[in-house]
Length: 270
Image (tube, rainbow, N blue to C red; front, side, top):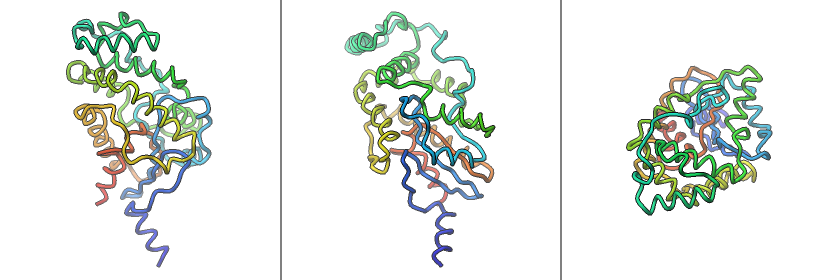
């Protein structure tokens, strides 16, 4: 009877989360689909490599690795070329512009070099520079390492979005992504602490202690566009997969908070 109940709960996706040494949760969807959802960090530190042995075992046994975008492929960088906009001094308030100048000085960037770029692009460039100053590098990102291992083992890679779709989403943000830049300026210190927290999830081997609520670095409108709407889209794609075992690596913040991906997948089982 006990084994039978265990199988029923497993089929319904109701088993309690297994304790891992990294942020992850298992989901069982109808139709014989097993997901190992991994909270990825797109940039990491050298001691985040190699990846945990259990994760590598999961990958070897997977029918496919699923990622937001295949960042290991040679795709055009979103940081080059593009639209010429009004100078940032005209798009930001005086206080915001002074804040931007101060932060650029802090990270060793010249604000004049991106003064006429779209606001979303400036925000991403500043965030990337902030991560580098904290010691994070793209080659140690979780999804990048998983992609390298999957390709070495000839494991199929499936994209939830792809670089082109991500770029199109950014280009369609209201006011050229001005809200994203304003949020970056306002929550600069909070974002640095959040990056350090997420790195600790992979280094401290205590992801069970993850907080239920994390500090927000997005406005409500941007959170809906960049997090909740994308989670809904990914939910639909994951629920349309054929039967099989999958390792799914998405940004760690997509596993927590309102409208998180595991909760949406669980909704589909109700």
